[in-house]
Image (tube, rainbow, N blue to C red; front, side):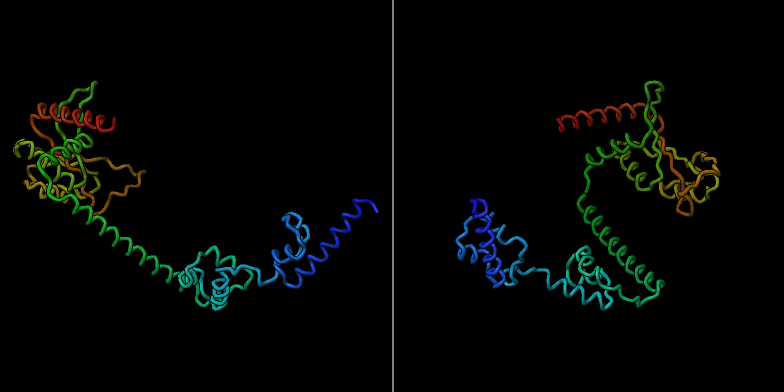
Length: 286
């Protein structure tokens, strides 16, 4: 018998012994010690294809969850209910129950839709409550504004929303246009900090021609506390029938235009203030 054949025979004999011990329920460590096989690669080859005995398997923490999920699924529970009940992911549930028959529907599609709609409404209500709480907390963080804080806010507000002179069209006028009444109130407070007298302010409305112009004019006049008759001539925007507008209805009041008379000097100072803020912004980010 050649050396190679002898080695093969010895390996096969050893493999038979290893398989027999495995089937008796011995662990890898026990087989290794019994047969004096210290090389893991050789031990793997000896036990190839032989499953480990049940007692050597590590318990799976999800086995109980899997069993319970299958039971609940057979009872007609949805993935969402099972997820809430067991605290596991819907992807795991799907794997665990994919071989089971689908439970019969206990509700009509209309009933299921109504339940889903009520659930969505509750979700929206909860989200809205969270939004209001978050906004209230943020509002309280502002506290009482100093005149300097309002001054800086107003400079940024004007430079974002107010009219600006261009190198190719120098128009140093102070004009502010906005549809947000809160922006208008804040802007007027800023002008007050700057010492601009109310007598220097002129107001007019810009609005689409098919809106309630009279109601809009009265709304803005009441907001800034002037007589409607003192407003300038309203600018009417022509309606394009091809355009689908969303700013319609009673809440649509167009925009208010606020102009400061003899405002060239003020405009130049606003431009200078803004330039100073830009310099500071660059310094802080350098």
